[in-house]
Length: 136
Image (tube, rainbow, N blue to C red):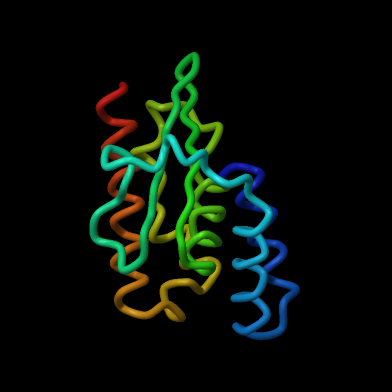
C-alpha cells in the first residue's frame, strides 16, 4: 500500500468522471507545487529520457527520502507532483519496494499517457530509485 498522500489522490480519481477531468486534476497538482529554485536546475538534476525539460532534486534527511522537481510541461509537472505523493516521506530503504507501475495503474495513467510521456515517467522513476539506492 502506498502512503497516505498517494491514497488521497487515488480517492480523488475515484470521484472524477472521465479521463479529461483526471488529466486536469494532475495538472492542478503540478501547479500547486512550489517552483524549483533556478540554482537547482542544473545538469546533475536534469532527467534524461523526457521529451520536456525535467529536473528532480532529491534530499534524504534521517533516512527519509524526499524530492522536489519541476518541468516546463504542465502535465509533466503534474506527474512530478503525483510521484512526490508516491515517494516523498518514505524511508530511503523502502523506496525500491514501491511498485510505481502498479500504483500508477490505479490512477489509470498507464492507459492515458503518450509513449513519450510514459518513457519520461519511467525515466523519472528510475532516477528516484537510483538516488535512493545510492543513499542506502
